[in-house]
Image 1: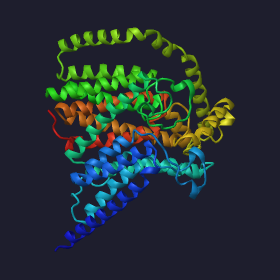
Image 2: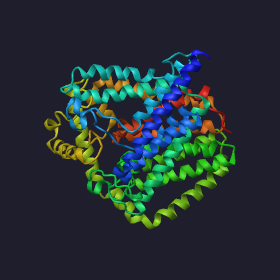
Image 3: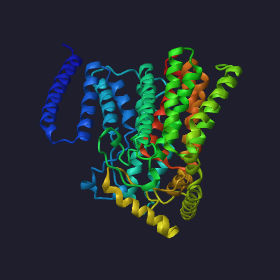
Image 4: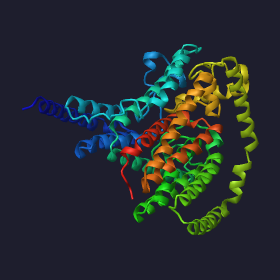
Length: 496
């Protein structure tokens, strides 16, 4: 028997024993668990069993990772080691164990000699290279921070993004690429469906109360009252997340030559549009309309859609949307104009504080995760709001934070002009990958790549009034999309 075969048998036997031990433990724990905990454990065990039985561990864990990113929870399990730093401490998210499992599967492939040969482009080229300058600035800015221990948490997040992109670069195959795209489509449907249901049944502020799972969430008052939020925790997290992905579904519907794929793309698109509308987030709603129009024009320009079909479909679509929204015109008008002035003034005050902060620390900023340290000096009102929000930290496993509502000013204030330049280089590199993928692919694959690129552009515009891109669900999804677009020309399957 070969050494490789012996290792495989040993690891397999160990896996069976571990699985048996876990199963016995779970059976003993069931009477002590509430419904939410039981569902979470069943999901975890089901994922492990599916990976084991299907012998497609990478596909299963990658899909589960993508879906787990939408469960926006942060667990501060390290407070016992490093002390309680509130929302500034080190934490882990539900997707992290799945990322570790992906790393573990790849490590086992190396041990057993089944690792695929690395691409000739090398480890970094096309992988995490675009984010490395930003990571370097983040690490240096930690040295100048008032609380460098706070900066560690966000630095770890940038490191995790880089590791995710490296893993994807080394491991993506046509099957894995398609798995990731399918999981993103499933995330659109799941989050939009839950969000719309939350609105229809007036589910209150509990994220999963609509399905009878009493997940707690901080009470943010009228800010999220009867607005779709899925499991991302806030309408202004859900809508920007969908804003990136929905145009890809639109692209699938427009560019595919296969009727079934067209219908699938159309169904996912409608679900995503409903989710964004139900979130009642102003900027994402306007931007998704612009993105859909852009997709229609691009499809017409590339002859995936005829001008006659564009004109007729636009008339029908606008008429249907107007008919659907007409009964809600008063509620829509109230949402648009009701607190618009206060929202604008709030953001202007935050922007002014961020610019003043940067003006005093122009090169490297105040340090990652240190935005609120001296906020009292720039705005007593905002500092009071942040303190009040941070007091909600113990109500749920959520990182309670509300920095400046402009991700570019947030990066500028915390990492200075060097950090903002590196951050913009990263975003530009992702867009460059999207353009390259859109040119190099055909059919439905091309539609998906064009859609992701348009969605990214729309989301980058959204971030001028938002900071969701810097928070976990959208941050790691950005790394995932960047890897998918980078690999598309050589790896993506040719979907008709």
